[in-house]
Image (cartoon, rainbow over all chains, first blue to last red):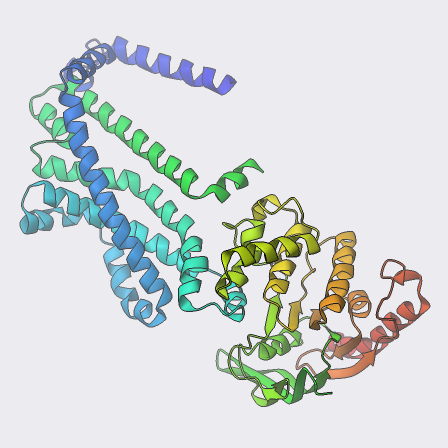
Length: 251
Length: 260
């Protein structure tokens, strides 16, 4: 309980200092002022601008998340079960992994133009990699003894996949998905800043271009809220889909 | 009567980073159906290797392993495996874990339910059918693993220090239950341990191993009745004497190892 008090005090002090210095110590142009930002936030919230852009970003992030997540999980399962394929592809995967995905954005613009398609696919590629690596690790991490125990029970490859491998990899896949949430947002927002005519990234970029500092901060606030909401959704999904984790936490 | 398991001059060599390492050699051992044979010896002496060869996980470098007079080739589905880690599926409840081998065998749902219920009763887990492994104590997890092993009814149980990580009281209780269940269902057991007391109290016969490369120094019939009272074993002179005898056999090799 006490920690909450400290946090509140810190937040209030920070906002007060900001409010006091904005326009006096530092020009309003650079840091604006919390009261102005809240007012701006309220305006764009009421007239629907914020929600419209937020919906677009959310749509891109979720579509990219689903496409990238499914492809990444499928690829991870395939390579996790096929040693030859995994060893063949290993150096290429490492090489591609070390490439900052953001650097691919210009090429995606070349390939897919500046529309929604590019933004979704760009997000998907970023998510794909994280989920793939996690799934792959998850499949590889299934203990050999466990596999032996089930083979001796007479389990076929199909049984093995359904009873042992997939559920084992499941918590890893989910860890990958949870990790991907901020990256999916990065993908969507970077793509919007570069190409956008809509979305929260566009809103940030557009406000900055018009020297509307409160507008930039208000849009950033929107991004933060969206990230928190997406994280909460993944966490809820995880609890719902993996009830055995819930009981572990209770112990 | 033919042996259930028979090792005929078995040797196994592994390659580790180019270096051949003899794990076991000159193994001759015959296990009768329904017999509990314990394998005791210092760690790394290849006891587990014998279990793995019985299960058909790999073949001996020389010699043969026979199961019911047939050479073991590939996975030997007539055996069940239990190790120190229980290998339960954390996402399945106790009942569903025990049901797994029955589902693999393609048994009808109602039959699976009936059998699972009976097994839960037998291993003393009544009331915990719906619990997840993470909610159970170490002993209960072992019981679940044991029930799962009995569910698919292999004629031989291969046990590799199954009670290694448990405290003394719990270990004793599970040893008692293991003997009772094996007698009741007439299971053949190969039981690996490094604990002399356990080797004597659980086994009908004990094979004592030398350090690596492991060979059987001696095989002893344990002079205790089949329905021995395991709780009072400690006061039984035959038990104490046998433990001392095992130690006498193992000690010289250990001392020699130490002196190297």
